[in-house]
Amino acid sequence: MSMPSHQTKKPLLSAGERSARRGSANLSRGTESGAGTTQVVTSSSRMRLAVQAAKTSGKTIGFVPTMGALHRGHLSLVEASLSQCDQTVVSIFVNPTQFGPDEDVGRYPRTLDRDLRLLEELCCPWVFAPSASEMYGAQFDTSIDVGPVAEPFEGAMRPTHFQGVATVVLKLFQIVPANHAYFGQKDYQQSLVVKQLARDLSVPIDIHVQKIVREEDGLACSSRNAFLSPAERVRARSLWQSLQLAEQMVAAGEKSADKIIGQMREQLARCENVEVEYIAFLEEGTVCEVTTVDRRTVVVIAARFGQTRLIDNHIIG
Ligand code: AMP
Image (cartoon, rainbow, N blue to C red):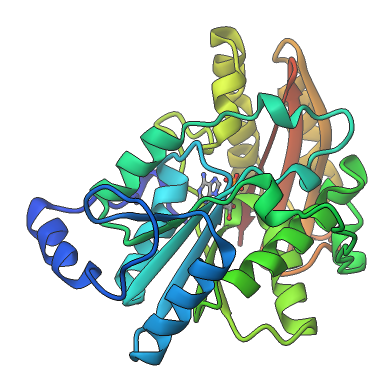
């Protein structure tokens, strides 16, 4: 049985490591405002020039796209990039085009000052924080459709979501032409969409997918957890509990996806006010459902806790 990822989380940097990183972070500066070691850039052209200059001087660049309201899950991606690349760019942009008409983009948590402090603490050299008008001019019309990988599950529940994601990710890749980009397994289908996009459109950036960081009780860290009431926060543990139940049933020899999903649904039904949207076993690296769990599979789940929709997944086998 694989170890739950919340038990394997790395500590943040020691003071010595931070100070060593500060030394190596002072490269190719001179863009916009910024306190201490973290430069905040709001202009696309300046960001691109800074990344190109760093690459020309032989530096490898890592890129972590986010919508901000940073938590330990985001920071694990930043740490991976910082440890593997010479320079790291984190983007903070709440992308309006990936929100559906019924989803309130204005309600999404925005905590830029706190985010910058956390990134400063990690000695992240660059933050790209554009405005919506910087990203989407008045004449913006292009939309990227990556095809079947974006259709089921999240694509079915949120019909325009992945077009918005693919379009903004490709645009960010143009602005930050990094060598490596870091995404989270937490958004499993999104990671497949991004890989498909990079492969199909010959984007010369290596895509890395980092494991899920969880809270102490197993709930996957998410900016949306802040929307849960205290009672919903307690109930939200049931997501991880149901994924663990799946893992235990497979470890005990159960191979029928239907039977396991039935048990997961029964367990979740015992929890008040939880509305399951989908549960499925997928062949790893795809959105193809498996009926027999006899190899590595990814169990994906989405459920609503009151107004808050949460997704999670777990690799089994
Ligand atoms: P977001 O800000 O929600 O768009 O997420 C930015 C990136 O962080 C995406 O690649 C997410 O998959 C990743 N991420 C979000 N939550 C977690 C988590 N709990 N563990 C690891 N990565 C995460």
